[in-house]
Length: 436
Ligand SMILES: [Zn+2]
Image (cartoon, rainbow, N blue to C red; front, side):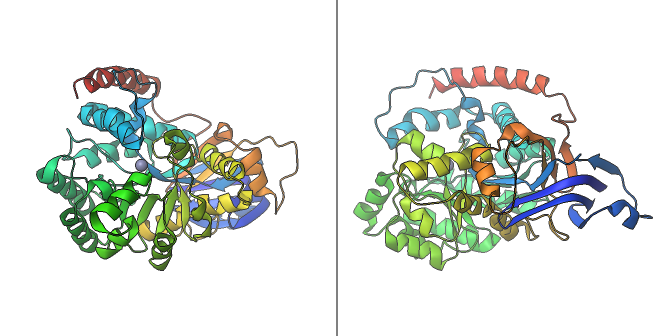
């Protein structure tokens, strides 16, 4: 499929780039040419589709570096949920009951609701972390089907823990291994998922380490989200959370360490030395009152995720910036653009191509924005426009892997019937929560 986007204003946030009156020629999944009046140059080339951007901005798609689509039907949940007084209480009273209530059908509609929201928000890659203990085998394939329905790019994994016993743990590791072995495509890759060090014994970490080596994929794990994870590790193992992961050789350039709110300096050093990623989830950290990670900002590989609170990276990045201001850190909007765009580095390490720039040879994950701006957009102020002006409401058209998956604010299939079914599945799911 060859696609020509005409009359675009190219806009990149990191590295910063701005160019007017540009055409973009996409051949299959790659950007082939970028320049003015490409139609003359392309005479003789087959062009299947032309999109006239009409002077609108085209940006590289946003990346959500940590999410839980399994929680998409938890929005507004009405169930008998006891009050939670700490982080572990939130897990026990809500999330570990909701995930157990999921079955094949509710997981699919949960994934579909999440994927629709992501594409509509201009997010072209969502890195997901699944948990559905009553529906383990094939659960990642169910989510993959939802991603593919919407044309969304993904890196999927199942979060392994010991909370269902060692048999459960082994089934969950197997789900990661089988998905990576049999289900990966150009658009969907797998990772080795794990819940958090405080729900994994040494034997489990050893098995996960074997899975990382066998698959050559990275571990995707929550760590030091709450102080409890750090205390648990010190009390039971006499070392910090990251020292413990390091002891099992779990960290490398594909590792995603999620939250890290309570990292020690030595933990941050481990992440740096392994060239791993730390994924910051500002809204989730605020919502769970787990504290604030002021160490993030010394790390080179910080990315941004939502931890299940939607997939709108315009909104999440703004929350991250404003929270840093509230915490008194002297960070600039451009620092947060670097964090957001680091998601492209994760994509490159998993997919193998080049991501995040509108240049020949890069993967064609692009978003067209209908952004009315009362002040000039120029080099050196694009981050200011992102934080203080842009939002997902200006997302008009989304192209992923060279394919137009959302055009003029429309999906190429009926969305209302999906939402209708999702609402029925949500009601059924909420009733089931009370059984667990
Ligand atoms: Zn999470």
